[in-house]
Length: 186
Length: 186
Image (cartoon, rainbow over all chains, first blue to last red):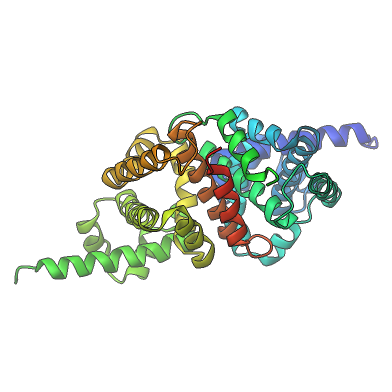
């Protein structure tokens, strides 16, 4: 048999994560059986699990991709860009993300891994906000952790409300203004 | 057979909602089968479904109770009280609540019902914040809907992070201060 090229492997990997994302978004983590994964991905379980050893590893790979994309957006465009992304794109990943919060609740090992999926981007973000605090562009009467955590809380809350398709459309610019006021130096 | 008294019915109802809450918190909505409900509640399915016609109605009854309690707390103690409640009590209802956001996503009828579970308390809350805006104690350069929605977003985000038992404990007072700054008149 010919040696499978790196490009081919990469393409297969993308096929698997794209199909798995659809399966998890529609059925949730528990509901996406191996049969459903096979159907959505269009590959046999043998092929799928030669790329990702378990369903959990496949799920974590999706979460890592999503988190990475979001962190890059945050670094490039500030938290305003993240708010706009969550509100305007109402993306598929919200369902996956909310599913994870249930799983994390009962699995301390997964929780620890989850929090260090993208260590480099996380460290970069921390440096960025430290600089903003030092430059007096973000309030520094509160610890960096409190401010960063607050932004995480707002993003998660937006994700829940968009996932639930709750009520009237969110006032994106008004929400960004409220965050600005929360973080403004005193 | 003797006529079942109103007090007895009320007690039974409480037994059912308490057991169902444990079942949903542990297994999620879909995972809490009728057998699991019977076991946790300690009554037969016949008895359970004579109080609540379907599993969905039972779930909605729990959500209504929770929302009612939270709205009363909000009215009595302000949004600070709600933040403290979510952070410090890390209550069981968070899991139920997050489950709902998935169900609401795909069920427009449920979504509409969900948003009018406690119409009186919701109207009271709206009047309260209108007064705060008029008295200049909450910023009035943004619509009431935007400000109210923002608080809902923060509560939901806190719920996700507490449900996932994410990271270090939340800085409750710092978070309340950030909300205060966000809402402060300019």
